[in-house]
Image (cartoon, rainbow, N blue to C red; front, side, top):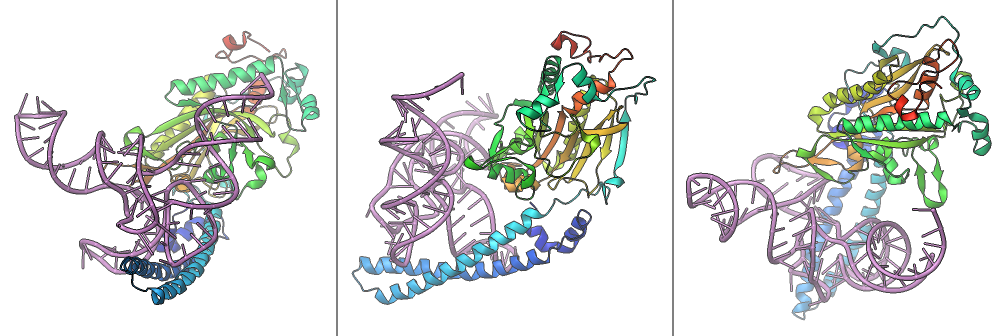
Length: 419
RNA sequence: GGAGGGGUGGGAGAGCGGCCGAAUCCGCCAGUUUGGAGAACUGGUGUACUCUUCUGGGUACCGCGGGUUCAAAUCCCGCCCCCUCCGCCA
């Protein structure tokens, strides 16, 4: 959520920046409604002040046993008018809120503008595997070795609900545990949040109202299935004023993630690449505005650390204004290489949302005891998403004789060296 | 799911429909005192919106949303959450 005051005062500047994300954005209707709203507030508050004075006078007269009927009828009229104005203001509030809730965050100046193709590859880490023997797609390896079962998963639930079995299940659990523990040791407070949450929570994360089609809803109970732990973690400190000396606050969570993935998928996204349910370890930080970009760098480094420990080649990509999530001011993706498809796939998306979510969730801190509360900055990043990570291991670690080498840090956990 | 109890300012905790944005205590901030700290004393200490900006004024907020009334923390209705007991259950 953007600050309506900033829109009011620096409309042209903000509009120009927002247009780099979506050319159709027009702030004029919001500004107009805001002006009308403030005009009505001035009017109704004057009337309320008059009513308050009048009501006190009524009380005084009644105590003295005097007649107040003339005042009563006058005040009754005022109250009716107040009711009308309050109703009108409320409708304006709702409409302004609705329009604001659809606007994206202001992009950071360092973010390249334009469509996805303009993204900037910041660096590549590790060596891109160039095997001189054929690499089977992970989907094939997984089925041949009996560690991934897409058929039974589909029968049980539906397509793109993969089942991990045998060493597949052990390896997936090991990955989750490895990442979760690693981040916890690096200072992130470990969290296992609820996997369902209510509408307000998803509004704060800004999953709602704009992206309702992407998440599963449990109609009967008014709850939604978690699509990313970001949606849950941002709500930990909702409506709180965090003591400044507690910032930054860092959390790591494990959750399964459920996504409807409405729309079509390509042939190349079969297998574990795009699924309705996957596992993810998520990093989240609450910081001061001054430190949020330094914290973004360290969050990215923490996510990278996982890929380094697993010895997987990856690249670091700076997303463009047109490609970021609504709430993000700046996003950096980590992409792993899948040799069988000769393509990179995102396994982590690290964003600084600045005060966008904090404003929605009313999450603040007090810089010093004397100062007013300010909104915190929130950051999130996958650390990282498995399913895709699993696919990367199954393809990158294939040996010439058809085995899959388990990353050495995981070997003790699964009590095996090869799959 | 059933029965009962409860949600008030950072915390605890009062509050006959008008004198209640709300007593009191604790905490916190500033000052006095002290070699320093503590104690004690004095003063201050919510949030948001809005108008004016030099000072400041107005409005709203006592779980949430409605209603009654000139006027609601206080009365009525609905919902949510917490606690206790019963039932069910991993």
